[in-house]
Length: 325
Image (tube, rainbow, N blue to C red):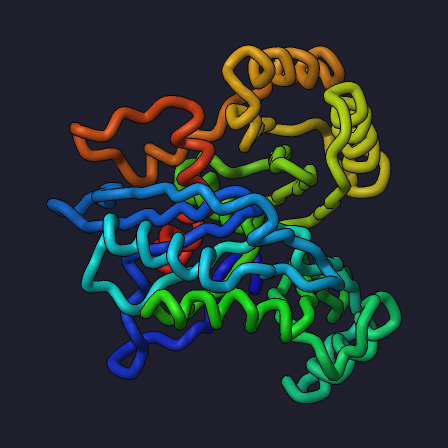
């Protein structure tokens, strides 16, 4: 699980093609998206949603997540069959709160990959609320540190929790070849959409049902990540303001080149617009809604309102990152 695919990822004759279908699982729904190539452009060819029974999935860091595997598997199978019935390998997107994300800085990076792995695991062992031996740890290089140092974006999740989602996929007849977090892939979708316009620091505010995640991206690299349980709009506005101050004081930022709000439309059009205006007033900058269509268009028959764009973006992000990378 990482915010972007490493530049050194395998390529060439022995590499497998990126998946064409991604599935996102939340506490309330399962969404599948299919991405196709048409005439040299990327197109959302199909999508499907399925509601989950109450309590079937309860995303969390350190407790059981999947309480009804049969119901989750049926929902996954249903949306995949509607989207791309012959597909057997998918990318899977999970809520941010199933993992702990940390930015860990080393003044000097070990030359050997094995030594780096041991150093990262030693660092995250201190903060993880479970045994590191029971964890799935992934990391991605972050920004350079003066001298020979580097920062790393490290994701830690309980292995049995991730496996519970994988088992549901297997019961649905598909294999989760890639697994990642929602906000990382909202970020990836916007990086793909921004293209060369992603220069400068920008802020992403991702609003989910039970949590908020804020990330700051610099030159395509994540430099700040904060996840909090959700409450009211005023608290979110305060959190955004605090992040802007931290960005200025601790990250050497001079203001955001753009601010993007994702996920808010699930609350309804009026609450989403009210939240957007509240954030604009709090930080004194324009807040724009999520829109990945500069990177992948929608087929003519698919209407794309704000709620649909919000719902599809995490799945689109994991598909786009494999192609853009």
